[in-house]
Structures are given as structure tokens and as C-alpha cells.
Length: 411
Image (cartoon, rainbow, N blue to C red; front, top):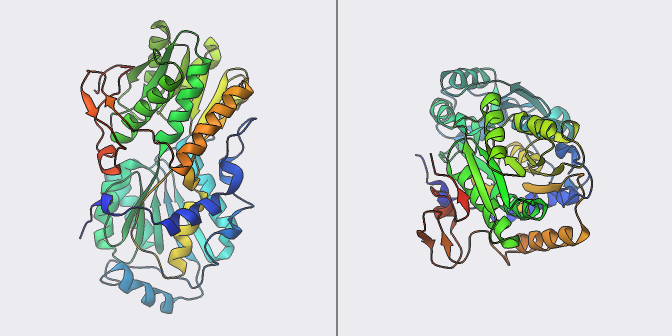
């Protein structure tokens, strides 16, 4: 049976464990970007206790449910390492989202050593290719598989039905089952802070946002960025260019030049190549990066910061859960307070006053004293989308509009 993801909130226990495992490496940096996957290295001793037990490989007939298969798998091969699959949609290069997941997979291996064996697959396309790779991972003995991109969700759901004793984790997915959990970062919280940073850096009062496809996660990010910017400068605008592709360097370059011609002077993106950063370097544009360390591409005086997820604690926690026989499907949406996302301030000069302001808001968001989507909210077509209060996760995960101050349409 497939379950409504909104019925699975992150438990307070899981929140505490993720935050403790993430450690202090996720606070606003005053220098360049560290290796994200190593930021938590010295702090996860306080996370959930050491894992016990292992589980063996499953076949399509190995058990009627994830719970039923756990004990049998452990008794069959208690001494064998747990095989953990990682499915990546892109190359493992320093500037991709896949790279951050891969770094966290390496972190997982360092923490658990010979208790686990990593089984990675990169450049996997969604659809039949993902289906094929997932089935091969299961046939080869993987007991836990992390699909690190939204596009793998449907393939995971299909394969999970045939391998009920294998556990699957779907990044940015929303479909769960007895053996399928989902996880993602509340990027919008860090985007709000990034919008504040961009507004302070902009002289033109026009910000540029290169966006891939209009799914709720992307729309949340655009709207949060705009709200954050307008908390600093109520007249600022955000111009959006849709590439309708997560990874298209040519279109991303075209988008950057187009928005530059429309007067934008600070740029950011939700796409997954270095094209925007390369144009920023060539045209000397201020940039807020996303999911990659662009400090080797963009000059220090232009890189304002980067929105970064951190999957270390989550991968460690979920793998330990399985090793302990306590894994259950969950819908995890972790934010600043959980250490799952952050705004890293880059090397570009930022005044101490601006740093203090952003850090104060960050702490308010972490403590629940402030929310990104609260109060009256209007769309850029003038329609009131929220009269007051705080937007629920259920409503947020169905977001299909652009906020007042955004120049562009959902298309």
C-alpha cells in the first residue's frame, strides 16, 4: 500500500539525531566553502548509537514485507557487509548535485567501515535505465538503495513492488510504501537567507534566477528568495528564466545573458551545471551558487555564497536504522534546524552588519520564531494566496504560483 507523504512528518527524535550528527559545520561560514560531506565528520558521535546486525541480499520473493524480511536476512548472513546502492543522475564532478550525494556516501563508508559496501551507479537516466539499474542492484544483493534524484521516484516505486525486502530511499520523491521512504531538504529556508544576501549586494534592484522546471521545490525556492530579498528591499524584483531542463548548459548560458540584458546584477540558479558560474566569471557578475563549490570558477570578489544541502547525517542515520533492524518508511523534510541545508557565505566581501542580520534571521527560522511563508502572501498576478498564519507543509508541497515581486510566469 502506498501512503500519503504528508502523513509522515519528521519525528522529534529523528530531528535531534540529524542535528546532532550534522554538528556545527553547517553554520554560516565567513570564508570559502568547505567540503560539505566532511563538515560533520567530528560531530556525529552524539548521533544514534552504534549499529548492530547486518542484512543479506534479497530476491523478488524474499519476504512479504520490509519488516518481515529483516529478521530472515539478518539470520541468513549476519557476517556479510550490508550492500548500499547509490543511484546518481549526473556525473560525479565537483559542481553537481550528484557530487554532494557521493561525498556523503563516502562519509557513510568512513563511519561504518567494513560493515557496509557501497554500490554506486552514476549518469543513470530516469525511466527504463533507472529501472534496469535498480533491478541489477537488487539482484546483486543491495539491501538499501538511495535514489538521489527526483526523476528516479517512479522507477523506485515499480522496482520496490518486486523486491519487498529491499529498502529504498527516494530523494525529493513523494510516493512511499512499506519499503520506500522519501527525503529532501527544505531548500527554501536557505533560499530566503540567500535572497537577503542578494538584496544587500544588488545595486540595480533586479535579481536573476535561472530555474529548471516549475515543480513545488523550485517554486518554493524562487518565492522564498524573493521574500527574503524584499525583507531587505521591498521594491526589489526577481526575474525568472525557465530552461525546462535540470541540466542544459547551453540554455543556462542563454538564460544568464538574457537576464543580464534585462538589468539583473546578482544571479542564482536551481539548475545543475556550471554554465551560470562560467558566465558570471566571464562577465564579472555577482553569484549565489547552488549545490556546488564554485570558488575555483568564480573570482572571490563575486561569489557571495552558496545554498548547500548536507546528506551526511541522514545517510548515516538511515543506514544505522537498517543495521539495527529498526528501519521504517518515513517522509523526511529537513531544514536549517536539522542541519540538512545551509547558506554558506562565500569569499566575497560581506559586511559584519549584513552577516549579523542574516545570522539573526537564520536563528529565528531554526527556532521556529519566524517562518518563510507566513502572514499575507500575494502572487505576482495580484491574487492573495494566504491571508495570514503559517503555511502548512501540505499546502507548501503543492505550491504552483510565483510571489509578488517575481517577474515571470509558471511555465
